[in-house]
Image 1: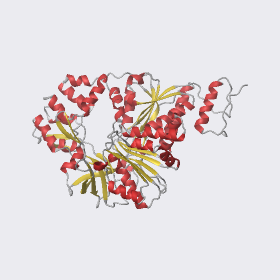
Image 2: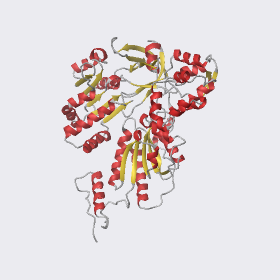
Image 3: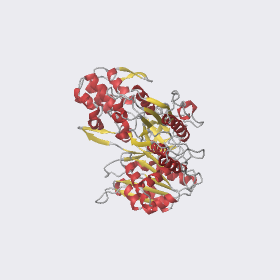
Image 4: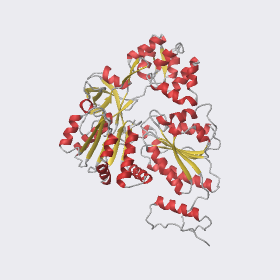
Amino acid sequence: MSMTPFIPETAPFSADQRAWLNGFLAGIFPDAAVTAAQPAVAAASLKVAVLYASQSGTGEGLARKVAKELKAKGHVAAVASLDAYTPSMLAKEEYAIMIASTYGEGEPPEGARPFYDQLCLATAPHLEKLSYSILALGDKTYEQFCQFGIDLDARLQALGARCIYQRVDCDVELDEDFAQWKAGLFSCLDDVASGKELRAEVKPIVTAGSKPVAAAPAKAQVHTRDNPFSAPLLEKTALTRDVSSKLTLHLAFSTVDSKLHYEAGDACGVIPQNDPRLVGQILEVLKFTGSERVELAQEGAVTVFEALLRSLQVTRLNRKMVQAYAALGKCQRLLDLLVPEQQSHLDKYTHDRGLIDLLLEYPGVVTAPHELVAMLPKLTPRLYSISSSPAAHAGEVHTTVAVVRYRAHNIERGGVCSTLFADRVSVGDALPIYIQPNKKFRLPKEPDAPIIMIGPGTGIAPFRAFLHERRSLGSTGRNWLFFGERSEATDFLYADELRSMLADKHLTRLDTAFSRDQEHKIYVQDRMLELAPAFWEWLQDGATIYVCGDASRMAKDVDAALHTIVEREGGLGQEAAKDYVQQLKDEHRYHRDVY
């Protein structure tokens, strides 16, 4: 009897490498007998689409890990982001594994929204031949925990797809739940591959992260988004100079007499209000007095003025708002934008418009206050990375806020909360705030561990907190900061503090990239590449990398620069460099807080 060659456990390979090699050998010697010493190989190969919707990169990392293990088991696995995926592509698959992060208030990540919007249309394809499983990622401190994964699961089943292994809802600390889901899913796929009948479906797993807020740890927040603390504003200081093209503010709130507690890396949630002038313009266009009474969920009866000021989102449009307005007014131009083929045009239309634009461009649609309330989403809190240290700034919470102002379609516009800070709040006034924990963005437990911080613009906020925290705790680890902005003379945030820390060696390295101070623009990722040998040396010394700031471009460019550094300085190929970066994530040495 012939025997399949196999790699023994004593061979100098990792478990993943050994599994892959054994699968490869089994494919070369398909007729050989399987002995007790050999690892079992799936009876047949399945073609599996591994899809992810990720905002910060966690979902992508898990998807690549799943695909790698599927390949090691002999299956054909292809990884793809839902950012570039369509329901028609999904309809062609027989097996799909979906890792879905929830973003904001129960929404899909921004890039995955077009896919989900198309999936929810009446014209979405039926998915009777699809078998799937979902891993939902979320944060239980948010009210809509794992909501996108839940909604996606329900929609797939409504379109006829079959759930072959129950959805698992994961909190921030997801390792155990991920392993449980993966083991159960792989067992089901093995059964499918060997022709066995699958066991009956079971309900989604309720993990520790799915428990009600009442089951939170002992140090649960007393002040939440539903029960915020009214915090007096102690300080409001411009960090940019008058000649700068933008305004960035340093804000300090008093937390004395509150039960707020936070750690460096957490965020401060602020309950905002809309600009009363904009509310007045909306009421004027609608010919409402503002005193009309409307019913709001969880709030009861309020005036329409109060509803627009404190409770409803009016400055940005989304698909649901446009859809409701178009249906109410039978606005054909808007209805045309809502077909799947026009998604890019719809995105362009909604990008820089708000409710006032719909009212002016398509007048006479809304005739009663309740119609208006029905189509508007809730005004959500704004989250800002905390730029203070609880050890260094007792009784205070600091934030760093860029004031958003722009003109579009002949209307002056601005960020709801940032213009509230800049124009409508003075020192001594109180604002409702709460703490949003960010367990995925913590300093290393080892006080002597080196850290590399990459935070252009207001992305510097948590790193100011990190530096003050490490100093207050007497941490001896080296600190390297990359900071970027437009001009050193006008936009160097916290310049005096950083230079002082550099002078006394608490800040080991400070490398800046001021994009407009020379003919060609320079960004933080360019500085990383210039200093690649030193960057690689810090990584070899065990440094942890932190990135904070813009998700749409900066974070992607920094990630690409990191891969390039690993590839060049480590002498690795592209795939090996990807594995190295993934290992950094697995070891909790690569953290991103991007938005």
